[in-house]
Length: 123
Image (tube, rainbow, N blue to C red; front, side, top):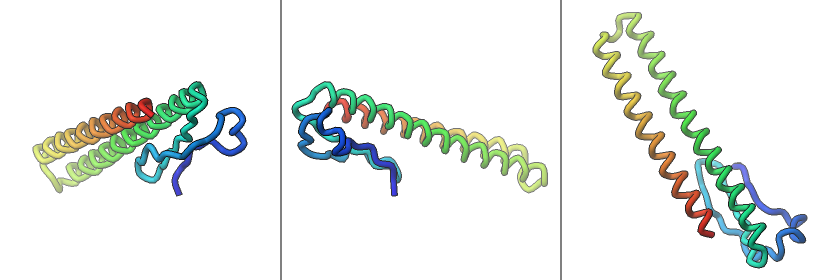
């Protein structure tokens, strides 16, 4: 089960009539839902800002995970170098490849988050 951010029935008086629930983001196991409140623009704006914050938080967690994988891989490669299982050139080449892949996936995560944030703010 993923995380779910939504407006509960207890908040109907504050948010006006909840017209529908629109799934707006799917990042891994986390599902974020926006309760679309047609009659209460201020509440919708608050919800949108909170969803943007949550999207940004999830993207940051994803980037940290990617960097952690890179760090673990480089540590393993350095151990292999110490045991003479790979050469210095092999190590440098693998470190560069790990960094290139890290940069690619961090950039991809940032682009996905930016697109999702834009989508949230358009609702």
